[in-house]
Amino acid sequence: GAGVSQSPSNKVTEKGKDVELRCDPISGHTALYWYRQSLGQGLEFLIYFQGNSAPDKSGLPSDRFSAERTGGSVSTLTIQRTQQEDSAVYLCASSPNRATTDGYTFGSGTRLTVV
Amino acid sequence: AQSVTQLGSHVSVSEGALVLLRCNYSSSVPPYLFWYVQYPNQGLQLLLKYTTGATLVKGINGFEAEFKKSETSFHLTKPSAHMSDAAEYFCAVNTGGFKTIFGAGTRLFVKA
Image 1 (cartoon, rainbow over the protein chains, first blue to last red):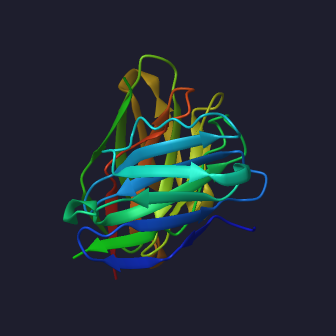
Image 2 (cartoon, each protein chain N blue to C red):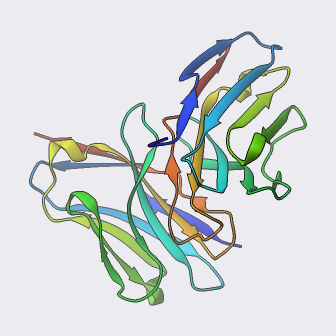
């Protein structure tokens, strides 16, 4: 696609429920990143996918968080048993390859509210 | 380890005045440096980047930034603020690995 697409744009869920957030990167971009943006804070790295390699999950805050990327394209971030502290904007970004000089193209994010 | 510090969570300027957003980084190796802008309810958009070469880099919307190694700084400037510049700005650093570290952001307010 022309840009990075994320869905849903907004999600309100009850504490304890599971949620799935979707990211569709730019076609041909092999690198995909998930970041979390909490109110008044910067971007917190969550996970990185590069092609068909095993993802780097070093930023996932707990085992309630997981992510997958199917066919080297679409990615889904899953949060199980959501907690109020999970409320944030979840941003997905992609880049043409592992090279870091290109910068990222970000989606508009999913605003998650846990009530 | 690399890190980024943005001085001032909020900056307010008058329309037509100079915009200066400060960014200092920490890195043990030559860094790649970026500025991103985020408008309300949107993702981040790349404004400009420094990788190698000329230390003064120009970006979109009239913004520019200068890499000063001796000061470990990468401040963002624009000579004359416009109302449409009101947004949040993020400085970011990468040292060649896959992970880019972002600052906490500076919200720019532009007064008429």
